Length: 179
Ligand code: MNH
Ligand code: ZN
View 1 (tube, rainbow, N blue to C red):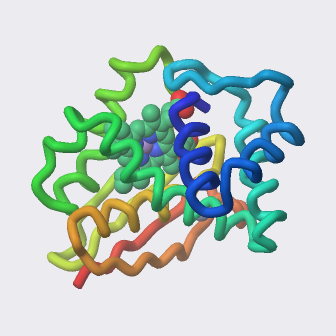
View 2: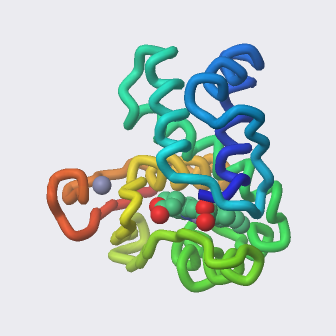
């Protein structure tokens, strides 16, 4: 995973539980002297270990931490890549463009990024069905990112997750219910 994602996690942890907590997590789960540079890739296992460390500190399940992380990550990425995020005037437009525009632009900015495949289909004016597939199985993070995006556009969003890679499916299904 790119440094930018680790920096997003750092921002959240420092805000929520302080700089010292982040230093302790780095000490326990990253190689000595680690500095995260946005466009550089670092092992996925390191991100998962840090996220698990946050979960242990907060005594919350890892899936909750990944969801909260995703939610704050949206604002972080949107701010960092204003040129990409400002193209969209609505939540729906953004969600329908994750693969075809957002992550396509990310591929131009970062050399061989590790991105999921996300397809979106409008079911009716209040419902969008997403299929998420990635070897990293970060569907809970995806849910968080979607909640972050909904917040950004001041929309009320509920997500159903009736099929999941963590339960043996080839891809996850996320059903987005808007108000
Ligand atoms: Mn996007 C990684 C989903 C919006 C840039 N993104 C990921 C991952 C998920 C994801 C999930 C984790 C990798 C994986 O699952 O395999 N992203 C989303 C969703 C939205 C989204 C659901 C909107 C909602 N992403 C954005 C926006 C940007 C962005 C906006 C920036 C303009 N995403 C990234 C980058 C990565 C990433 C950068 C990390 C790639 C890497 O580590 O190589
Ligand atoms: Zn899932």
